[in-house]
Each structure stands twice: as C-alpha cells, then as structure tokens.
Image (cartoon, rainbow, N blue to C red; front, side):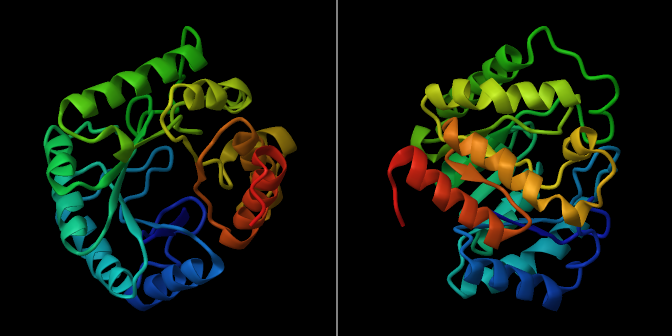
Length: 262
C-alpha cells in the first residue's frame, strides 16, 4: 500500500502532493513502482493534528481518486468520515482505511452496502490527543482484543469477513515500548486470529527514538527492517512512503518465510 497524502501538514511529505497534478503523478508513479493499492488521504493523522472539515477533505481527495481509478489503479480512501468515504467510493475507491475502526456510526452501513474492503486500525484517543501519556494494561492484549472486537462488530453490521483487514496502529497512541512490543509479538498474535494484518511503520518517530535524531527522509532502511520482521510474523500488507524499497523487502521476506518467489 503506497501512501498518498493530499495534505499540507502530514509528518513526512505534507504539502508535496497537495496540488492535483502532483498528487495524481505521485499516485501513478507508486502504482508503476508496484504498489498494489494507493491509499489517498486528505486529513493528516500525525500526533497533534487538528480535524479537517469534511467538505475540504472531499475537495482534496475525490478528484485525485477519480483520476487514479480511471487509470485502473486500486485506490483506498484514508478517512474516518462516512461522508468522505462515500464520495471516495463513488469516485472509484475500492476500500476504506479507517484509523478510527468505524467510529463514525454511518461508516459500517456504508462499507457493508458498498461491498468495499475496510481496514480497521487501533488508535488510543484522537490524533490530537493520542500521544498524551498513552497507557495499557498489556498493549498486545489490549490492542488485539480491541481489533478483534471491532472486526466482530463489523461482521455483525453486515461487512463480509473476507473484506476486513486489521492494523495495530503503530505510532497511534503508543510509546516506543508499546510500538516495539506490537511489532515483536502483536503482529503474530493478530495474524493468528485469521484476519489479514496491515502494518504501517513507515518513517514513524519510534525509529528516531531508537536510532537518535534522523531526518524523516532517511528512515527508509529502518522502515524496511521493521516491515520485514512484521512480514515474517505474519503481516499480509505494509503501508509505505517508499514503494520501491517496500516492495523489494516484501518480496525477499515472502521468498524466505513463505516460499513465495515472485
């Protein structure tokens, strides 16, 4: 999954792809580089981010999604708002990547009705508050329990089980220790539950907390290490800024761990 932030304030590439032409060109390039799906978002979910008005969010993402989908690219919409998701699906998106795990009461009925895929992610609080002293009894148990509960509710709301993917939410309301625990054992626990697991560790701040100060654009090697270990633990998908390096590492990991040579 390639990350396409049509935002002015995302932590890695905020503003680079805010304009339509730049966003579409980047989406096309990620698909050409091998991304199976391009994840388009119009609202930053970095720590401390403020909400975006739904109308503005739609204006940012819908033209980009329509253009990419018209070119035959599989697109997901990264949003927590059912109204934005509906417009994106109408424009050709095939999945909803929801960091609130269907927090909007209108989202589950929409996804069920549309037949779209859905990613349910764990987040503690909201982007604005999630890094304010996050605490868990046991982060692996708590996160996996939450996601399996949300997945069961989604099925109960009419979403087909095979359309559901779960994401432990690396960096979303987690300390360094929480993130490392989820990558070390949480991914395997979630994969054993039977749902495909998406891991998004790309360029996140926990990397800097391990390695020391390092610019965002120089975190791709550490991202590869994180995602390769996640794939070895059972992850089915990775969400990346650098599609070329992400795809290479995924293919090597698949060949070694799963016997799946390209």
